[in-house]
Structure formats: C-alpha cells, structure tokens
Length: 193
Length: 76
Ligand SMILES: [Zn+2]
Image (cartoon, rainbow over all chains, first blue to last red; front, side, top):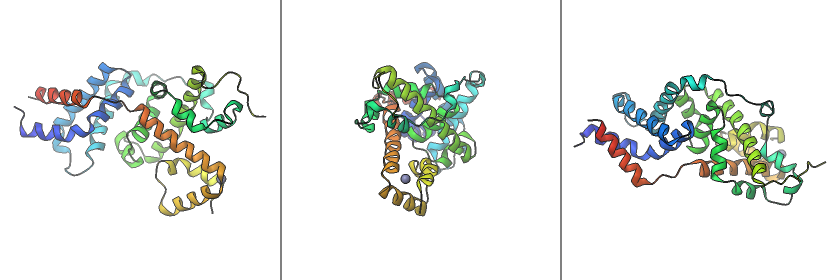
C-alpha cells in the first residue's frame, strides 16, 4: 500500500508526467534514456519533497530537477562541442526566405507551416545544440515564461532570451532544409531579383 | 509611435507575451497599418504554435498512469 506521502507525491506529479516524458525524449533522443531520466528525476524529487514549498510553482520545480538530472547524467556528452557549420552562423529568418522564394509567392506561408511533418519538427529540434533545444522546448512547447526558464536552467533571463533567439534562428534554418529535402520547395525556386 | 525597426527589435518578446501593456499597445498599433510587419508577426506566432503542436509527444494517459503507479511502488 502506498503511504500518504507517496499518494501526495503521485497527485502532484500526475499533471506534469506527460510534459516530463515529452521533454526527456527530446533531450535524450530515445525512449529508454528518457524513461531513465524521468525515473531519476522522480526519485530525486520524492527525496527532496520537503524542500518544495507548498503552493509555489511545482511545475517549474520539477522541471528544474529534470534539467539538473539531465545535465549531470550527460555532462560528458554535452561537453563535446557540437559543431555548427559556417552556414549556421548566419542569422536565418524562415519568413524572409520564404518571401524571397518565387515558387512560394502565391502560396500561403502558413500553409507551408501546416505542411511540415511532426517528425520534421521533432528532428529539427533534436538537432539543435542542447542549450538552445532546452530553452525552445521550455518556452514554445511547455509554455514556461522567461523568468520560469531562467529559474529552471539557472541562468539570467537575458541568457534565456538570447538562447531562444539563437535557437529559433537555427530551428528555422533546419525546417527550411527539411522542406527542401522533402520537396515542399522544389529545386526550381529562384531568389526574387 | 513604433517604426518597423522597433517591431523587429521587440518581435521575440511580443511573440512570447512579454511586452508590457503600453509596449503591446504601440506594437499592435503599428501592425494595424503596416502589412509587412503584420504578416511577419503572424507567421512567427503561427510557427510557435506549430512547434508546440507538432513537437509535443502524445502519450496514452493509461500508460502514463501505469508508469506512475509502478514508480510509486518502487518508492517502498
Ligand atoms: Zn512595419
């Protein structure tokens, strides 16, 4: 039989479990590692439950533990500098690029977004260097505010904003590249003169 | 009055709902009469929504519930 403390814990966790798994999956890239990451997070959270102040932001608290657990477990792997190609250094604005593309002049840019496959969006995210991936996930997918993210990743909000900006530029470039690979944008597109 | 450069500078904070009331009002006032900025911002908002919808994993709630129960048992 679960104890009162365990029941209380399960009740606190339940609304966030899906978000925790989803984020863990994007961060680790595979199901088994995501399971391990979430389990470790829950164990730590259960042990630290006394430090959680009732009626404060439980969602941010548990995500902070998830992020710490991830960074500890993957310290070696994430120390390897992820190579960013020369092209990726250039700021990329998907809207602007679509606007410059002749073949898309008449089509709706929003239809272009709708046509992206889930797998393309996930893969684009998975390819982001982890610091960028983390803030984009926390902001765009999980809906945390800048201040909450600053607290979760333990960085100033200025850092959150600049990583978000950088992350989005890269993500938009990757989406554009997939769209070309998938043939949503055909080879005969030309830059508007 | 905001010009197009202001819109570009504040776009990210607008999209993330971080402008204060006055900034937001001035921002939206510009969008009302500047079609290029309006379209650009609309696209950024839509992209944010698409990322949220398409990158969020959909789990079976029954599976999740079972996982949680498994986990709670391990706490003993
Ligand atoms: Zn404008």
